Image (cartoon, rainbow, N blue to C red; front, side, top):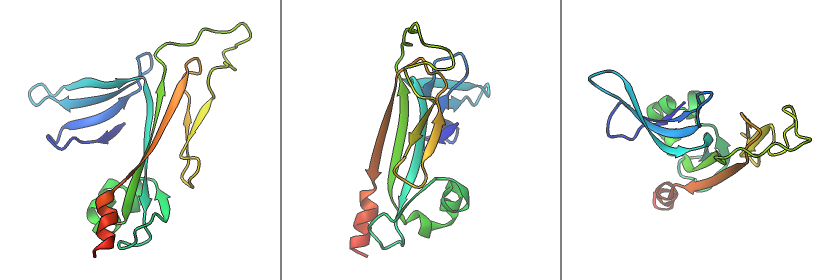
Length: 164
């Protein structure tokens, strides 16, 4: 799953490597020009999921956030925002959620079964306080997980509304 481009080369990509049997990792990769092969470098191991939503103002000159929107589809997807600058100007914040897991699995308890391990839930809910809450399935319940959630205000966008 690609989540961005570093801007220095059109073939660079940040992605989550969730191949079964391997340690999940957040990776940066490039496509080699000569061999047309994929070369990756791990940025962070044990990253299970990265999700983002936009904090959107009602209008381009409004300072506050009136709704949270998923960065997909005909209104808020990358192609839509490139073609529709007024919507791009309405984004006031980006909220990111990252699910990370402990590198070591927990030891199995005597009463722990494959169906009901006791260390982590079957799903995680991200952005649960918004209408665009995301439910992420837990790929392996025998690890401990931590959810990091941060809202990044886009100060230039907010300041722009104060001096139109």
